Amino acid sequence: MNDKSKKPGFLKRWLFNMVNSVRDYKEYNNVPTLTSAPVNDRFDSQSQLNFSVHFADGGRVVQMNYYDKRNEQLTNRLYIVTDDKDFGRELDKIITTEGLRR
Image (cartoon, rainbow, N blue to C red):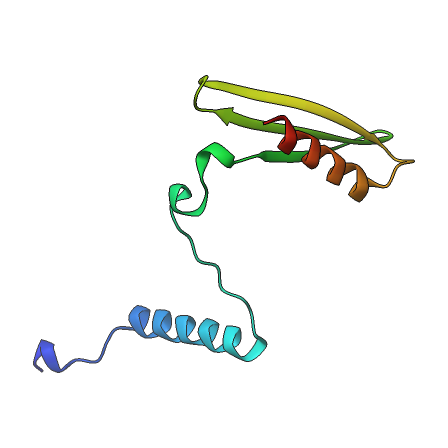
């Protein structure tokens, strides 16, 4: 038997079927697909403001950081939001304050 006339091997068929089943599942269930792009294409590095939220006893800690290219300085600030305050409103205040500082 000629090697060129052979059907694809088991592994190739299995992989092909898996890829097609995932694609069909995403289309049927309207699963959003993620696209990636280099960070420089998505964000202007001078206007980038990053934050992370850490859970703690009695509230949350919000860490804000950004890099100032002019001064070549990384700025970090911590904010504590207690459980008795509305986290959404407090986060809004924090982001607004940091945006105005820059």
